[in-house]
Every structure is written in C-alpha cells, then in structure tokens.
Length: 281
Image (cartoon, rainbow, N blue to C red; front, side, top):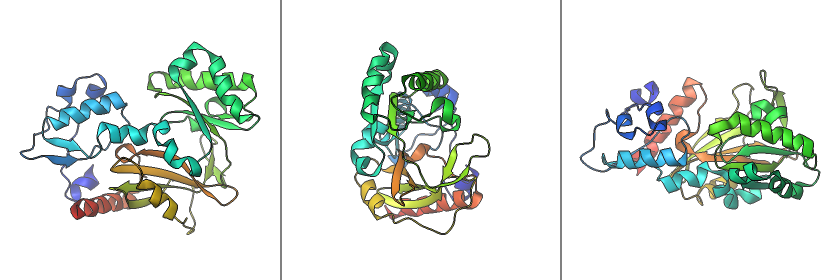
C-alpha cells in the first residue's frame, strides 16, 4: 500500500471481514464516489466469485469500475475455466464439483481411474495445500484408493468453508528440483510468476523467495501468446521447468489477488510497471 501511494496511486482501504459478512455498504462507506466512470484495481486476499460480484457492483454504484468484471475474474480464478486455453502447456487435469464429492466417492474413483498408476496432485478450483504435501496434496499412485481417500478427506476437511468450487486432480509431472522448502518440505523448483495487464507482459517475478535463482530465463513467447486468449484484463500465469527442460504452466490467476514477493525492490518495480501501462491506455 505504501509503495503504491508513494508512486502516485490513490489508495483506499476496505474491511475484508465486512465483505465476507455480506455488509457491502459498510465495506465501501469511506470510499468517495467519482464524478466520471473510473477504472480501479483491487489488491488483496482472494475473494469468492460471489463476494467479488458484490464488491464489483458496490463500487460501480460509486462510478468506480474494477479492471476485471466478475466474468473476467472467474475466467482465471477458477481453474476449470482456463484449462481449455492452457491444456497443451499444463499437466493433464480432471475435476469434479464438491457436491459430487460429498455424495459419493465412486465419482472420484471414476475420474481418477483415467490416471491409472500415475502420481497425482489435488487442489480445489483455486488453491492447493502444497505445504501439506503428503497429507493433503500428493498421491503417489492414483490407483491406491486407501491413500486417495486419506488425502481427499484431509484436503476437504482442512479447506473447510474455504474450499472453492470442487476438486481438481492433476497429473504429477516432476519439476527440476532445486531445494526443499525449509518449513514444509515441499520440493522447490525454478518457477516464475508472469503478470499481464491488458494482455501485455507487465513483470516476471521469481516465485520462490526461499531459493536463489540463476540468470537463466525461459522463452516466454508461447505464454505471451496464450495470455492474449484470456477474457481478462489483469492475470497471472505461474510457470515451472520440468525435469525434461520443458516449461509448463502451473497455475493461472486473477492479477488483482496474485501475491507479490516481499522484496521491496520487486514490489516497487511492479507498481511502476503498472503505472506505465495505465498511462499508455
């Protein structure tokens, strides 16, 4: 916030708890309406599509239009909505709605059977629990129903009310390992977060702060082309290098809720780049 303000951005704060409790008027009570329609950007925690819609409509009544509409937001925020674009550049993935999970585990077995004996990862439509790698993320053999039940049950219980949409089952493709996370033990790889604004590359960020990157930079041409296909104005694409030297897409997200490194230099560079892109419009 302070970096954005120092670079000339007008910054207003909202109370996240009020938004989550459906108190939209309370959320926006301190935000002044604009005389003309202005485009604004939300920077904060991930929101459910329902809460994002409420925030969008509430701001619109003040003549403030979020850079991504609710349709733009879910286009990247929910993994199944972006899979058809990135399918050739990301591990094979299948998903089921959470209601189906609660009703009958046989639905899970049918979906996961397509992976045969492969190792798989699970996540919801937005996030994984990768820092609980063995308990709630990774399944070494997709045909092992006992382990599958164990990991899915842990994942669903631990996500609780924060579970988004359903469960995604993804082929596990090992990335080029550099180190293990010092706290969780999750394998750390050479990964980058690409930020796009108005379908143009804004910034390339090191994904992990726990490792030192060398100067190798991936060829981004294919990912820049893919970014132009998203029905969204502000997105992030996370990429990683696998053991066969191929760069894959790990995740796609809405740019407004995509995290930045704590490194002050990178944060300042992000907002400077964003400011330049805005003035280009």
